[in-house]
Length: 365
Image (cartoon, rainbow, N blue to C red; front, top):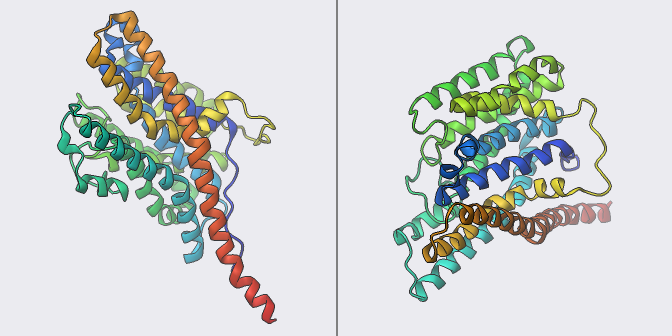
């Protein structure tokens, strides 16, 4: 007899709010690239110019959260694994595919209107298909094309495919050897960050999969260490200082170490019940995926504005604020009206399929 589908543990509210700060950091980094606000406000440069590390925070958080959801009830067997992958697919693919198609329509309209498109060969069919099937960051291309932030989604999907095996190995690992996993993972992060000082950890299409794998493994191991009481909070507080120190020293791996300490510190030892009414940060944290995927549309609008004007520092700062708010609004709308409804529809469709044979069998009994 097959048991009921696996239900993942509810999200921790504090960790969901953290998602807002991480995605906000990433968006500010991308806004600063064309607007160069950090050049006029050097005090903000350590934060703005290293906002790509928000993605590393998401990779760590992904592993940590998956351990919380599945560490004590792993998706064993073919049915369990397929149910896990269906849930991940229903969560990420519909909005990704819609954003990609919408971008293709936007590019087509821009070309038809005679607008100049930078590097138009980026928008070809091969790159479109690689991105559609989320294999564009599997060392399959060296070109940032179409909805280029989806490289992070591509490596996450690879992680989901590998997760059942990785989880099984981590569960079977003796407690005595468990601390070696984050230590070795962090050693790999240090080595990757030292490979090219000009890049730091900002690898995407090339070595982005390795960047993700190291941090995903660290997040999973920190999750198990935390839930099994092997990671004292008194130890994490001084490690948290690595976050600002790494930004000041421009040492990405040190910042990632601080992020790895921040995540278990935010999690409450006894999970609090979900708030009856979600606050703004919680809603925006839930919408972080939509914010990330919709950034490319905000960027397109920003490029058009900068083609027409050359603002001073105050104007660039104003554009940064406007772009940041527009990203949040677009991401929330995408979450509210695409991501959530599509996810629910796909899961209901699957449930109804599984219920039909069961009713047929019951009728014959």
